[in-house]
Image 1 (cartoon, rainbow, N blue to C red):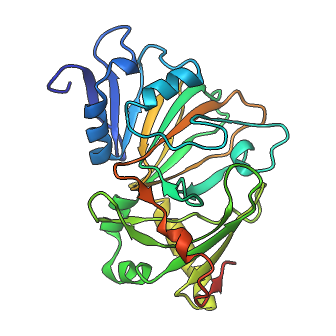
Image 2 (image 1 turned 90 degrees about the horizontal axis):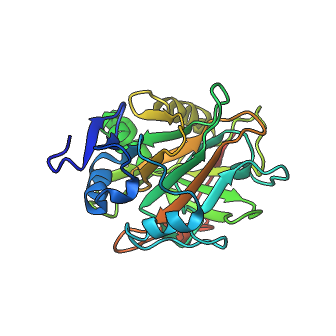
Length: 292
């Protein structure tokens, strides 16, 4: 239990913290946001589980999120309902898997935190885990020669804007965390070629020769999915997960079509707001090696 006995804290494997209630009926709203924010910045992932149902609709989640900081607004508002659409045109609203990525990559600003609220969890064996990669821990383990290569690589991403995001962005593979300057990794994995995937994105590599791309992607994929740094979160009803969007990448495992899986997500900006400098490099005409 933490020193203030306001909630229970347990180390979470392979990274992050599991936060539980200190008393029966306790809600997430009763937790001190300042303490949670500090823990999220230090441990990068908080799983709040076992609390009384707290956020039953978008307004209640939005009111809570405002305590964390400035909300990043989207055309749909503050809260994205992440669930399958029968007429989906993009993988976000399909039941397919979603490759690792960072949020805000196609937008002028990049949020510091994601707040996820689970309204309905998938049934057992239906899939739908949300995946997280701790890029700081990964980079601490990468051999120096590989790390030096990664520092030279930039990637251009392009995707059609059929929902609330899209366009073109060119980002270094490694960037400095805007809070402390430490290296973090920014990457949007290519979608699996033989799997269903709506609105497939294209990748082009700068700093690699075309004949290097396949081996580079295979090595990077292996490292990104190392279980020492990669976590798949199995949702339970009323779970609230707070993820550090600066140091983590996240994605989704595929789930059974027509599953009840329904998450809500809100983005919280840091202070100061992190501006997306990768947009300025899109289309900069650097030599390119094409993915696949």
